[in-house]
Picture 1: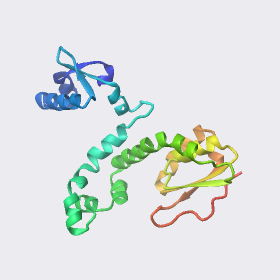
Picture 2: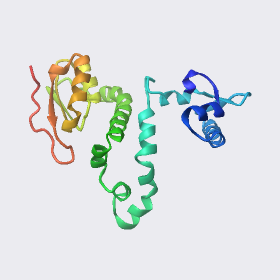
Picture 3: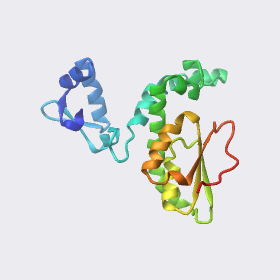
Picture 4: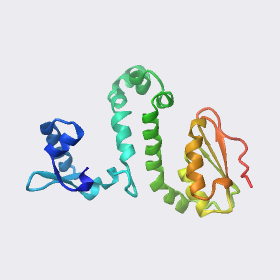
Length: 206
């Protein structure tokens, strides 16, 4: 909402269903970190540091921020439990492993996959700068989900084929993404779980 302009904490609280005074204190704390700025009139506005929290920002980190706050906050708070017992904190808190949890909570799953895209997108250029793929016929993206990194590589090396291995439930999302980028035919999709297996054959389609 702050993308629309400066708002008071009361107005923001009314729109999101929060306690005005409590929200004001949170906004003041975030202003101390440089995410927002408080105007002389007591309103809050975005700073450049807050721009990545928007969905449509070029380098959006919104999904990543939501994932840390909603899915991983409580497990991180159980670090001591893991140190004492060796038990995985995520399983201790949620009663199941991460990927089972994401499968049983589709909204959290979508946020997680969007967060992984948030993390991958800014690193794709660095990968292309650091590594020369010229002599490689086919590249395999294991656990690549919607193929953000693989897409960047294939666009830079159009002669190369690609194979993306991820969970079967991701297939519809991948298909839409790659068809719009015009390179769907250059890729083989392999269903699998990267912690258990990976594709042995990675021959590109014609």
